[in-house]
Amino acid sequence: MHDDQAAGLRRKISRLSQKQAKTIAIVSGKGGVGKSNICVNIAVELTRNGNRVLIADMDVGMGNIHLLTGQQTDRSMADFFEKNIPLSELVIKGDQGFSYISGGSGLSRLVDWKDETLQKWLYEMERLSRNYDYLLFDMGAGASKEALAILMSVEDVFVVTTPEPTAVMDAYSIMKYICVQQEESSLHLLCNRAGSMKEGRDTLYRLQEAVRKFLGRNCRLLGVLPESAAVKQAVYDQIPFIVAHPNKKVSICLRQAVKTYMDNEQPYVGNTGRESFIFKFRRFLQERGMGK
Image (cartoon, rainbow, N blue to C red; front, side, top):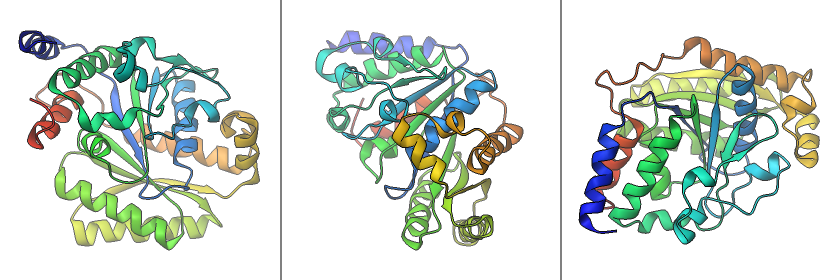
């Protein structure tokens, strides 16, 4: 791609004025807290509420959204980089109504993007997002450059933790980074695998107070998901637990968490001076010499 072609793509991006999907990053400071499973079940519930949902699996080299839904696929985000396949052709429609793009094993190439590749990905993602109401980024554990670019650009960040001290500390660390770097993102907390509802609530309250006291930011509490054998069984069966076991307490709590979010959600108002996800993503990379 020549410079004039890259410039043309930038102009196209600037002309896209249609409503874009609401962007949410689902993140945890460490692996093993059930983040991807929660992402899938949130997508199911948002879809049941009449929304069009797309999950972008950003778990570098270890994407598992397709496994949690029981669907095998040979298509992934890596095909965009390695085979130049358009993002729209990588979208898979899940059995539960939402769509997703698998992470694949080549996503780490994002850190090596040249400007023309960056512009093409952004342009295609911008166009693709116009077909959905919600774009969920299932983030990998840790803080890779691509993860940070997304976290600095989305409208809402769902931070998933468990009551374990290491998970709580890692969740606080990722929120601290976000608060220092970005003043606009809205933080939401969800406690998973709680031994009791009290343990889960206490975990959330401590984190919320720490963020308020030391970072000067407020984070909203989405709720507590209790430890449940039904979740493990659903993972084995490769069916979202909210579908396989709708009457279990964990499913009821998940539905309530989504309702809490939607009831307090700030409406998306289109182009009213707010910077779009794509614009902020580009700016983050530009400031770090990762794109023109």
